[in-house]
Amino acid sequence: MSGWPRSIWAKSMRKEVLLETMGLWAGYGGKPVLQGVDLSVRAGEIVAVIGRNGVGKSTLMRSLIGLLPPQQGSVLFEGAEINNLSAHKRARLGIGYVPQGRDVFPRMSIYENLLVGQSIDGSGKADVKERVDRIYGYFPILKERRDQRAGTLSGGQQQQLAIGRVLMGDPALILLDEPSEGIQPNIVQDIARIMVELNRDTGITVVFVEQNLDMIRQMAQRCYVMDKGSVTAEIGKDALEDRDTVRRYLAV
Amino acid sequence: MPRGNKTTSVLKLLEGPQTLGKGPGFWSGCAVVLALACAYPLFADGYDVGNNVYFFNWVFMALGLSLIWGYGGALSFGQTAFFGVAGYAYGVFTINLGDAYGLTLVSLVAAVGLSALFAGVLGYFLFFGRISGVFLGIVTLSVTLVLERFMSQTAGPEWAIGSARLNGFNGMGGMPSLTIPWFGADIALYPDVGLYYLTLALLVVVYLALRMLVNSRFGNVLVAIRENPQRAEMLGYDIRRYQLVAFVIGSALAGLSGVLYTAWGNYITPSSMGMSAAALPVVWVAVGGRSDLTTTLFGTLLVLAGFQYLTIYGSQYALVVMGFLLVVTILLAPSGIFISLGSFFSRGLRRRQARESI
View (cartoon, helix red, strand yellow):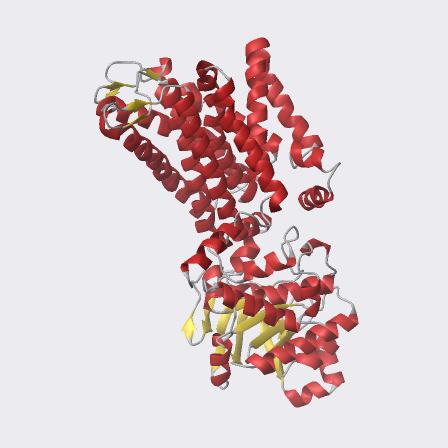
């Protein structure tokens, strides 16, 4: 079936660079938060962005999705500069963003929330059903509670819904901002496992900001370390195995 | 997809998460109400029936505001601007064109189209200029007040379009009623049984069409925008476009109200765009329950009937009572009287109310 064409395409392009920033400066007026961020993510990778509080990790995410215009430098997606694209256009290009704090639509049911995620192409009913079923497959709790109001879900369930909702748009890249925040450890583990599964099954690329050591180790294939608004180090797969290395970078 | 399937899937949208009421119980209730409405002229004097068409005339504007505000989350305080534009346009068109050959019906469509166009232009600057919240209310209110002021000073003979005098604050009169071309003799719809049935039929069509609209994908996205505009945008929607479409549809319905009102009374005045006129639709929609079409429909009829009763017996206090009603509703029953009262008796409505009090 043609359920996830973009991700399958992404899989075949595994070695290609999907997302790149070059000398990215951005901020909220006054002193810029991001001061020349360089990073490069290949299609099919899972990359963590780590660093202490206030070094600009969330700001980076916000400028990648287009909530914050770059002051200097550029953001490239699939090789094309997207600096001037508004957020909804970036989403349509295939960038899915799950913000800190989830932001589900609290007064809508889980199913309605998922339907809103289907924005990329106005494909037919059968396709919608197929995608919803696929997401229920990864997140069974969403199926169980599909008619329940999203605001009544626990934090972990809302996080799963937020991820599922973004997946409805069949993104090539998914940006997660602190997915473990305020969620009980065993659910964090579940979410990390599901993300790895998704990556393996569909080739979806994941970039996530995280402080939770276990989640980083469970999900990430590579890590960028940020400090004072720029990337100061990169940790490869092997170094990630060593708890202490990662802990040292996260240390406050 | 075979044609039959398509029709049923469209009809399925009549029920859904964004509208109250589903299943045989609800629809048979609707059928009974409709049958009563159809039977009413059989038991009443034609003159009274014609007078009471007045109540239906306003419901279109209320349903439009429910779409824009209740479903889309954008409070427009100036729907009367579109009411007035379409009403005056109908007057100007028909006075110049006459009522033969079905030209009043052409004028109706053209006047509604003109108000939709006006809403399109105004809405473009509002939504693409990212004006939202209370500022949207202020701007739309200003627009309707400006139009009222402008029309009020058009008393002189120099203010005429073709043979149609605008007549300033005295209002424009003398336009023909809606007239249906018929073999032999045209049927002029004076306020009587004929006009009653036409307006009722329009109301049923608009109500059902809006039900389908809000339960469609478009409606789902519109509600998502009401809930969290930025989030909807992050999911790939150009929310400005959705809000604009809802605004244009809702305002065209206000225009339809304006045309029907003008054709019904053969009269329209600038005060139909004034301050108190602009506030009333907000009261009707808020009191009935803005986030549902059915509660808006019945709430509007109920408040209108109450207002009419008060203006006949209590004269100048009617508007004060309306203001009081708005304040009480917002304080005690924010989701509208029907949902609040009904929640004493029904679990479904209690859930719905809980949804809205978050």
